[in-house]
Structures are given as structure tokens and as C-alpha cells.
Length: 344
Image (cartoon, rainbow, N blue to C red; front, side, top):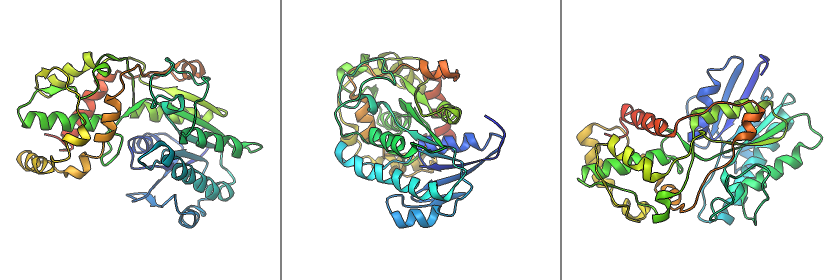
């Protein structure tokens, strides 16, 4: 990338993906970063992207933005209900920024393997960017189609980044698997229990991959020079929980017992009082509400009793050659949680 001054607008600044992307961009020469989130934060603009007027009022004056990185997300109970708000947020952002920023050069859209129907059941693996689509609803697809239509005849370009499950440290996020595992292990240890894999029996032996948030930030920045392309981005290695789970247990000094299917969202619903006592015992600084938002997502991931991986060679052919070791990623994240006094 050239050294011309670039101004990044990052939507979803407090999430696992957005947080790491901002941290990466701030280390790169020539970038100025503006974060967007609903609740705001240091150096961020607090904006409700679902509110057309608020979005226009808060973003309409950002005339120097050159790059939009869209990683915002709102959760809903069903796949169909996810479409209207998530499409509306992207639409409102682009409607506000495009006329205000004449120097806009690129819009990066964060997606995932739901584009391939991975959330619906067994799908073709390895998934490739050229694979056929599937029956809607799927907001990731609707968002990309919106950008494709909007970009026609314009000077700016877009990219669609497709990670697997992302490993990062952001708290209060509905999709932080590493944090869910760390808290589950910590509670198991406090109760004197072994670490049991809680997912479906077939999920213990399925092939999976993950995406380190730092690696994803590098890939997302790299892809801003691409011309309307989608890229699968993952660590580059595959694993099975049956191999990795005992190593995770060993990190927490826990024994392993046979898997036992159970919903973490259900069995962890009554653990706030226990966590409060754990926090007091070990001097933790994070309440249960900040570490318990990903139980449903963990159930979702641990329910994949089929292979879950994609072909990342398109990005490599285009010039992105970074990779990460998944087990090392987990242990680094656990170390960071401990250092930040999130877990014992």
C-alpha cells in the first residue's frame, strides 16, 4: 500500500474483530483511525447505525474518510430476523459516508462462513469463494449484494473478508469462543470438576479451523488494495477438539472426562453468584455480565458435528502469506485474560 494519508472508519470498534483491527491500523504508518460503536469509547464516535438521522448527524461531517471497515453486528433470535437490522446498519453508514467523503477508496465488509451455509448443517468443504450460494435468509449475502450494486460505476472498491471463528480478547461480545472456554474451565476448576467437552458427540472429532483476530486485522488491511474480491481468512491449520481439548484442560490444570452434551447457555445461567465469589477470591476485575455473553455462541460452535473449514489459497495466491498456530493462539489469549484479571 502507498504512503498516502488514509483515514479508516471502523464500525464495530468494541468487538473482537474491530478492536484488533483498530490496534493494528494504529501501528501502521499513514493511517488515522476513527472507531464507531453504539456505546462509544475512547477515541470513538457513539452512533446508533440503526437510526438514519443519528447516523447522518454523526457521520455526515467525516469528509476525509478514505476507507470504511465494516464489522458491526446486531444479534437476533432467528436467521430471518438478522437480515433487516444488519443490512440497515450497513446501508445507513454508506448512505451517510459516501456523499460526505469524496476521497472514499474502499469499503471492507466482514463476513464469515455463513455465506457458504456453514450454520445450516454439513456443507461442502473446503469452502471456496466461488462456491454456489444457498437459500436465504442470510444477511452476509444481502450485505455483499448491496455493496456490489452500490459500487457499480463508482471509483471506490470493496472487499469481503470471510474468517472462521475469531479468537480475540474483547469482553461483552456475543461471539467470543476463547473467553467462553476460559470461563467454563475456571468454573469447572472452582467446582472441582474435570473439563468435559459440552458439545454434540460428533463435534468432538470434526475438523475445524479458527482465525486469530490479529491475523485477521492484517488480512483485512491487506485486502484494501483488492478490486471487489472476497477472501477466506483462517489461521492455516486444522484441528479436532478431541486433540486440542486435553491441551486446554492441561493449561488450566484440569483433568479431562468423557464429553457430555449440555447447553452452556442453560447450565451457566445460575453461575453469577459463584462467579462473584471467584472474583472476590482471586481479585478479578470483571463482573459475570461481561464474561457470560458468549454461552449461546459456544453452544453453536460445539454443535458442529461436521467439518468446518475453507480453502484459503485465494488470498495466498493474491499475496497474503501470514498464518497463526491455533493452539498457541488459545494459550496466548488465556494468558491475556489472566493478565487482565478476567479469569483466575
